[in-house]
Image (tube, one colour):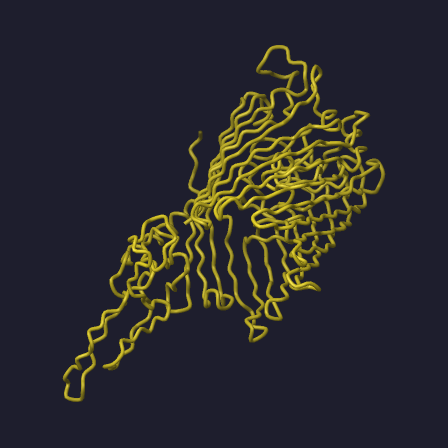
Length: 611
């Protein structure tokens, strides 16, 4: 691999690791008494004789407190030992169960050390690092992903091949992925922690990624067949960087309004159906009526993303997104929250090849000319419970204009719809679920109306989510994708993170039945069966110059395990397996000359460690 230079992300990590080590070096691991920065001189009477004060030893606080930032008061007090730092009040020694505080067990009244994030720790914001109102939260995360999958893979029979005399457009489908992600988040804020919103906040998160892809056909890792069948990539960046200031308190109940500027995470609705991303923007947010109402007004100027890691770069693209939404808790029914939202997307014309040398903007379909897409989304969503039934729903209408849609080969007026509903019922340790989604398709790709539905940058969580084959895998179709990784819309665009929304698409119907088992407090099983079919297939027939494409896609079966051995987020293990059993419509798209498309399977293992 070529030697890489130091980037801003790597330099930022070195700085923040150095600061963290310096903070840890200043603190004693398990102080016998409260660690004070200054020891005042003992008080004296008018004759200069020192008072003799009680020699009561202070009990140490629980967890890892670090040094106090509060200077003790001067003066005499012959009856009480004062502790000015109200966060570091000690607790007497108590071995509640008489087992000597065994490691790995949830045990109360445990003293801590700097390496233990499970108990209270000054480095994760449990104690102030400066004074009594300024907190530091350092979070280190490492996520390792191993995934094996079967994806319909086009061959290059007229250029160069791995095997003699190939005759099919689709070859061997096996792929292997390894992805390693590491991040260090430094979050400094002033407030009273959980008691009221922060007065101000600064956060920065350097991220590092290494990924490897191995396939069985040429022209997959790169359009240059001489690059072979394996790809190794690395990427480092600063994913989050923002400052936040509280503008005003709106009521005595800690209602507030704040502003945040910089690269920040944001999800526009409960399930991430339209926009869910971490990107550069300015956001005004707050709540009212005792936190019963919440509101957001945000404008994002999108940064380009790396195709292999999905992380941000330091270069902007010509895309502006504006979002306004309003939430009302206990709306009509106690425990049910309703949301209204408006989203605007202005995605300008541009030309981009990704790091793997593939054309991603404009979409390599039809005329493939740079074009501008302007859309307005109007949505209503809800989430919560009505009596003992859990309900989550959403309905969106998108309107706008695409000045040169690549498939329609003309300017089109956009008008698409989407509806989603999930109902579930809890019975002891089992949850029964049923859900459905409809995204409209375009029945006539040659006219001036684009009636398919597409999102901006979605990351949905329903019908199996990351465990589902259809939502997890990116299924290519001659330069574009019939489905995107982390999406359910068959939008025929080159990339969810780098391409442009396309509203001349076949649309989708999805019906889901699922059942979840809370086997133990730390172990959960998630199981789903989805039946999928296209809303309309006219776009597919025109795109492929192929008649007789049926609507049925197939059955998506998935099962996953989520294991949290410490009953928190410090260690999370995910294990998933899925399969797509294709029906006529899918087979007609991907059949081989001599055989029908068989079951496509995938499995993954993911381990996340957090400090």
